[in-house]
Length: 199
Image (cartoon, rainbow, N blue to C red):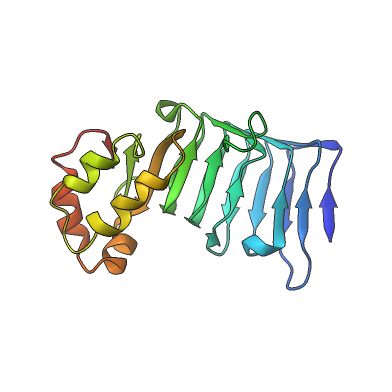
């Protein structure tokens, strides 16, 4: 295991790549204006009680199902593919994680949730990604729409199971279309008639 903890690192490039090692960031770690390059899968990465301020986070391979729940992210920029990630304050760990003033415009996000945050202070990726604001509170409205394929019965019904603190949910339209037997264009046709969407 390679661990960074109990220190502040500024203006450095940290590359997390290894075929055998697990990388552990935290506890009590602050990265300020650093570039964090992640080249390992979620199972080889632990980030806990860590603050990332003004950092660039670049994933070299798709980062799947990673929970940034005990990470404070402020003014960071994200690049690469993130699938099934959770950012912000998780209900079971209040006060441990947050996200504010972060930029995902160069990232590709799919099935990625933002919890307990002010979504207006985040910059989401452009089309072909799209972001639904307050999806959990709007799940009835979302499932009632005439979605193509089985998007309504599949992806939109899942919104009801999200924590009430979910402020935004981002999908990749091509990935969503592939999973639910439709096209990105057909999904966009529904989105264009809907309020509370960023794309």
